[in-house]
Image (cartoon, rainbow, N blue to C red; front, side, top):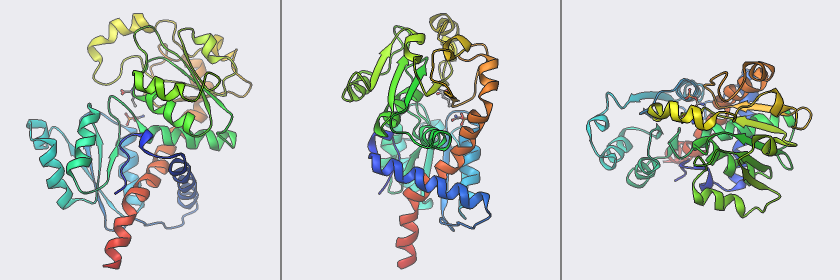
Length: 311
Ligand code: CP
Ligand code: NVA
């Protein structure tokens, strides 16, 4: 059973194969070539947090693959009233062919996989955002023609985005640097994951300019993630200066890309001028959520299709 619970569960080969399939599916979609690889399959999409990109791209992607997406809000599900995830997993496994879930705790996603009997795809937790990073890597490859040897720099919070970017960048041959304020570093085991690649490949500092030197890709994300709304004021103070702006871009490599998972807060983590100067990259990145996730859906769910067809 193949899941996408977090990116570190996948090998480099699995990541690259998915990026290759995503490129192929993007080509087929753009050229009107039918690719109904999940015909008749149903994906349940559980959302315990808001979403624009993840919801629409999974819903459209599943439809383009010939399957059926089912939007399940935690406000409506019994899970929102306390039904255990272990029971929800066993019930939904009897109706659905796969589940995409966006929630708070990573342990909830892991429990769905443990107790369910269908593929589980993580559509964002407080810990990680693997689907976003697959789309990010796809976009970098599209603009730069490669990943190996490029330097990614992340400015801001040691959050779900940064955790998955560290894993995704280092596993595919990129180097990774970041600038985070004191107290907002990624978890220790993610730092240890990075440190195994050596100081040349992985560095976290407090000074954004130092981190951005010679970067080929600059990445940033909001200062306060979903669920941290009450910390907004404290975070605004902590992250002042951790901004992607013209001064920071001046020390990067020529033709440096800027990526943002979105939604963006202009004037906070990124200035409006840098955002607009790189809008073509940022919105291609957003589009690539569709293609990358279609590849993930096929990787995780198409085996079931083949197995059932052969029965
Ligand atoms: N980047 C991202 O996951 O966007 P949504 O929150 O709109 O899904
Ligand atoms: N770190 C952000 C990412 C949104 C796609 C959040 O969790 O809200």
